[in-house]
Image 1: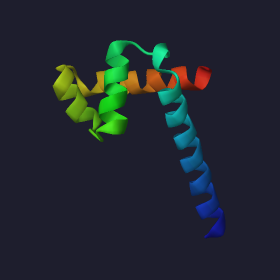
Image 2: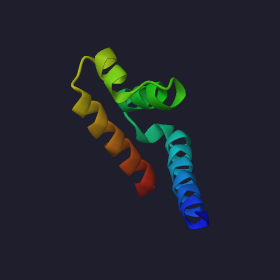
Image 3: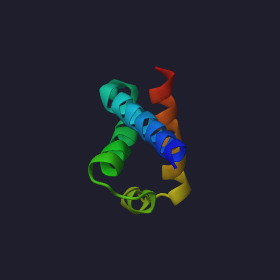
Image 4: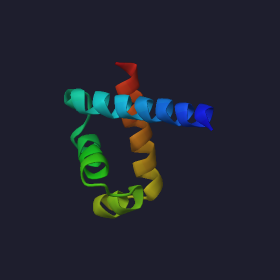
Length: 75
């Protein structure tokens, strides 16, 4: 049980670090990507909800989120 909790905490810390890097590097993203970041992380919308707002397929938002995270990790 303790090992699983430690692993979960490590994953949570890594996710928070990526989110922090995303918000620290605003200039790295296109206006569309930054809009997605705001809607997802600040407003708490799902990928499907964001896709409806942008009038694009759900997969397009998922792909954009992967690109956003990749940019944050490459810095």
